[in-house]
Length: 244
Ligand code: ASP
Ligand code: MG
Image (tube, rainbow, N blue to C red):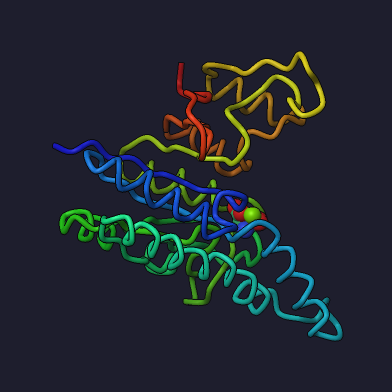
């Protein structure tokens, strides 16, 4: 049986053709593993989309949140086919699976919670040797509208998929080789953790050190999903977060 992993790439990992090419090559090299890819919008895109829709609508307070959700999710909708194309160009077939076909959510627009994960479309592609690429951060509401999962929600999408597929998840970050006890850009003596328990990671998160999005870390803890935080474009074991 083939090894399976969810690989999530954040906004600063997918914001140039050069970086997407490197991701494609990395995934092609891992051809011994069934990889399910989750991507964020390119860095800055979600913020720009939020500003744009606020300008477009005179009275943003009255704009239905579900329309805002449909607009801001287009950042992830654009990065998914670009990353899939880069994987394909490296010699491994890839296809985009719309997140609305995978995540059934509640109807709290702007901050949705996923209630069911439909893995069938992903498993079908994996059986065919195709790498599924899913845009993170959104799903389908109870009344079949697009709904977003809250800022940083691609982490949540990735952990949900790992829990549903019974595998580990790697969160790849650009220019970040793991989880530190302080901000390594500001504190020269900051130390990287080799491993953390979910309890320690959640504790760090509430004390200000950003590990992963709230709903994602709670789900990983509840479902005992092993989470690896690794550098996207460098070698290094990063930090592993697991049950104990
Ligand atoms: N693009 C979304 C955000 O910026 C989701 C994510 O990046 O995880 O919040
Ligand atoms: Mg983002």
